[in-house]
Length: 284
Image (tube, rainbow, N blue to C red):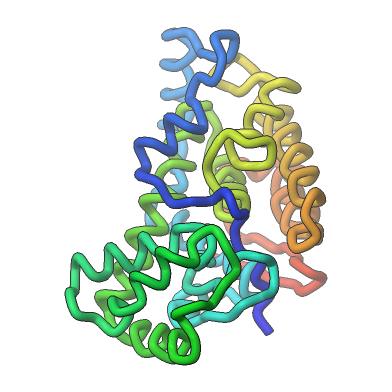
């Protein structure tokens, strides 16, 4: 069974521009970098490949899939769907879109804009009704079958990637660049927003970042990158442990922290890590 853990209930999909506002590039005056610091951070990140480099992005997708699906084959997950009893209804697709957290609704809305009359369009009223709950009302008994059928459609696969990037990947990479962190740090941000969702609550991505910034300065503020990322992972781990479905922390302990301790801030292969005790590696 895939080891999915889904998204937090607060992870309602919002436009990327709003995500950046809510997580706060400068959440408080004391955390706003000076122009000189921002320029310095920009030069620092420009010197290395960022996570939105195609090869690095592919690595990021595989890393997340190793934790979410116990597989590096992230493209095989377009058809994935099940209720993992975490209070978020159905969890599905390449990034764990959930019927109870709004991002699945926005995905199907976008898919329907691109391809009206698709096999999932008829579920839009039900998805609006169950948003914010774990209910399957109006979805059963055929929603899972129809999801898998839709997953054979290239337009639906593209829609999943579009919404993954709009809601999660692009905002986390943009925030990472603004904070002056490199490829590994940007991935650490991305993995956090996938699990905890955007927003400012204590255990959302914005809350985790705020906690980390209370302990260490970002590189854009003149801080040490490794010190800051350790603080972020400490805060992330506490957020995971606050909820039973997230309490297994190997994706932090034996993956992200391992790369950080190795000094691999560029997320350069070969990469070897474990999640749930299972070994994985990317050699190129």
